Image 1 (cartoon, helix red, strand yellow):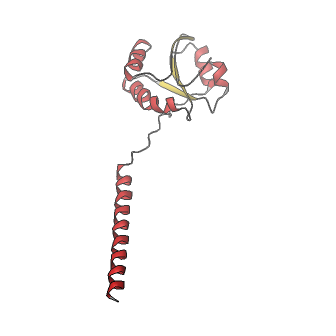
Image 2 (image 1 turned 180 degrees about the vertical axis):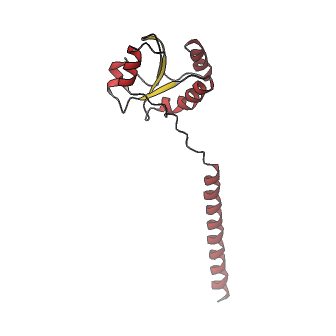
Image 3 (image 1 turned 30 degrees about the vertical axis):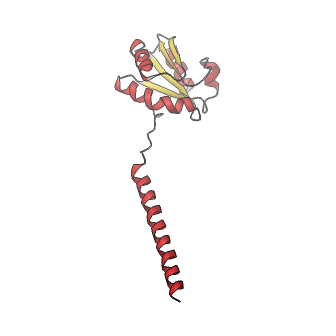
Length: 141
């Protein structure tokens, strides 16, 4: 009988310890989770962009796809960088506007294009370093 009681207490103690450790890990995950930031708030449609180009406006547009792994890595770099440099960079989701691929000759995402006086002045393609994007923005304001 003593052996059964010792065995039951041991099993119960192990279960309590496992529950405690599991709850502690779950609580630490909740406290360390990062708030999701929306990098794609400043949306523009192909029609709006086409109209702005026709009206000879200066624009910088970031073409992206939400499922693009390169976009998900550079968005946290380029969107805050443009904002900190006081650049009104607009974004176009090419999954929502598949006609944007041909309309603006986009070959892949991410692509950032600078327009001035109704003409494309420059573009930067793919995943680049923060410094490369910073230099590009400085040269294409």
